[in-house]
Length: 342
Ligand SMILES: [Zn+2]
Ligand SMILES: [Zn+2]
Image (tube, rainbow, N blue to C red):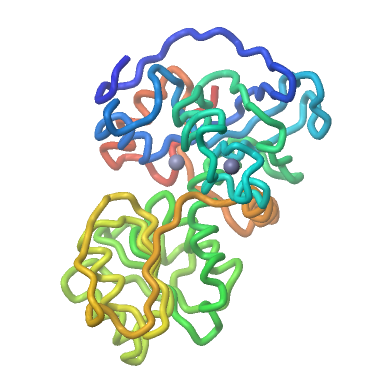
């Protein structure tokens, strides 16, 4: 196995938990677009991780066995796995923001987790290095349903939550890109705010899905999108724009359709860039990136999901078909999220 190759299905030994560790029997593992970047676009020079490792960073299942000293979970508990594995003791990790760990050299792997540098959940069992990384599943939520939420739900939830103060009933939020993360963003906006929501995509079926998910307006992505957003907002522009693509054209659209004092948040990792100057966007527009979310936000998100307020549309694959799941994802043939169920 090497960078820039397709994944292979191989036999690996069942892990045994050391003190403090937990082995989870996987009930679902989400296949993510970022795995495609991992397989196709990165190499040993760009990444701090050693190969091989098992893919799958969106995981949930049942506790199979626990190491000495583990007290908060016990065999058979249904759990979701928080995917960003930090050092656990720095200031960021202490408040649950392990996605921004400031001591990555002390973490189980540098800036990663299971499926990102260490063995992930596209397997029967997953070794989790610490019990704090497990969130109990609330009643009514199955592991296969919860798994994709740990990234595809948590990432938009964090991006939305940090801008809640700008999402009043009179404000407008724009979701650019209605894919795996975007369709969850629409539900999360409806569940947690009273803002008007405009969805933007260049695919008609994605816009239809957006309307089903409660978007107030669906706008085709083209050269007129920014004007369309201004028109729908009485000429003011949108208060918050969430870009789940991150290409040059979508970032440009987001900031040109922003209202003064607005937030533009780049979540997608397409890697586009735009020149920045005093005049390139309305006054006091904040432009930021976000990466994943916190442990406490995952607790909140699973609570929302257990009450039926957010649900990841998904297509299920057997473990033997995991490589097919990635091919379908690459070819844009998956409706909602691809989830591997061993
Ligand atoms: Zn992911
Ligand atoms: Zn840390």
